[in-house]
Length: 308
Image (cartoon, rainbow, N blue to C red; front, side, top):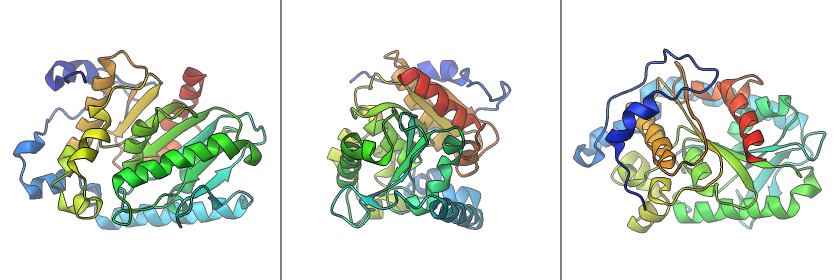
């Protein structure tokens, strides 16, 4: 594995601003050395709910859940399609009129212990409005599954799409996308043969800082092997387009995670933009994926061209 020198890339990555954002975007320049942080500091460094307040996070979750329920009512034909034996091993699929249209596969977040496709389905509205198909997989949550098991479930889900997607109107290129824990999974699953390209939104790409964070690891229970083998920052880069996005009002440690991972891939000249979404936090940045002309929707459209 190539050794990553964070300092040598901070200036270069800070200058990268994707189309549709403002050049004057204020970037976070504060760096975090997780090895010297106390457990309380580490918890707060990655606690996105505390940053925006539980009330705000709860309001957004309620809003998304209601919008997803409406979407599922409007498109009930391909919901809860089983790809594996466990309760949450199911797909919700929203096929486009054209089976060969690109398909946005969205992996939900929640630090691998919360969330569901029934909450986050509305995030594919932007892609659907652009004539794409979309699909969301469920997966078993921690502590009922380890991160290794979750990863294997999602690989099985993508195997299922490769084998059975055509029966449900999915015959075009697959662009994988995910937010938070789903952003991590997007980077990790980019190597799957069915995936053409990916968009990782506000993920954590080196799991080591989370190992001693009780808010996360009390349920996820990361092992040393998982930190080594399931951290995209510790693995060889995949030579497919992967854009990496974050909100400029997110926690500094979350911003650093995205910037560092983009720089890590850039060392190997791997394709993909760094996309700071101006004046958005960990939650509001997702509105740019819901809107048909949102920054992240346009990033997904661009990925389909790059990955073809």
